[in-house]
Image 1 (cartoon, helix red, strand yellow):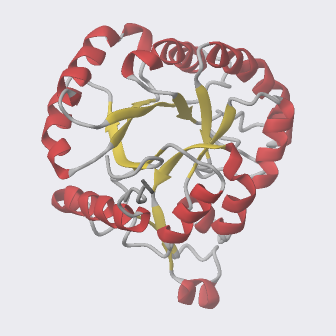
Image 2 (image 1 turned 180 degrees about the vertical axis):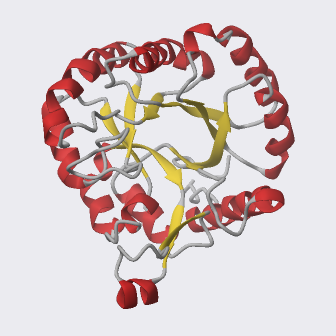
Image 3 (image 1 turned 180 degrees about the horizontal axis):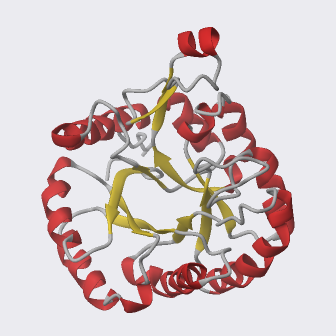
Length: 300
């Protein structure tokens, strides 16, 4: 392990091929993995014992870990999809330790027929028992800061979209194991500077997605943001506008000890047959920004 505090890894999907996929990408030097499940997945129907065994076998002999389990659905819905999301999250909270994970991350969910503040009571109803359940098991919960195309007036899938929203959520459920799965990209595409937010909220960050953005300011200044022309792109770290040396310094200064796991499959250039080319470049770039740990001399 090259650093005692922050690991650099990537996201992997939970499926029957997870073990095989891990064996293929581990030689590139990934140090951690977020194990992800998407909406429509009912984790109660998964053979999680088999999946945990497959992953453990793949990781055997490697100094790499499952940092996080992720479930990205809409648990605030009062329908079958919402019920599946809630029970899947509860299942993954109970089983996170079987994968070696210390946190569960995902979306808060959202009811789009009401404003973000008006989702507060439903958020408490759904997430307080889940957060308490996680706390009893030593698991942190991190909400991703992705807007999912929603807004303050009409949120979609997720409420944790900006600092003003974070204040509402963490005041509503004041539990210490509730936090953020943060990345600069989702703030940058809103034309917000992520660094002041990072410095202010670093104590709430339990996991980091390694995803960056490129903002085409010439399009913004000429056309604004409502012209229908694309003005911002999600990028793999190393290809976007952020200085990850500054980001990692701010994380370390704030006491963050965890993983930065690259969220691939978004870059408009390094995709398709270039997907792993981009991810491995991002891995090495982030490792360079972090630095390789060198022990201090000991006086004898």
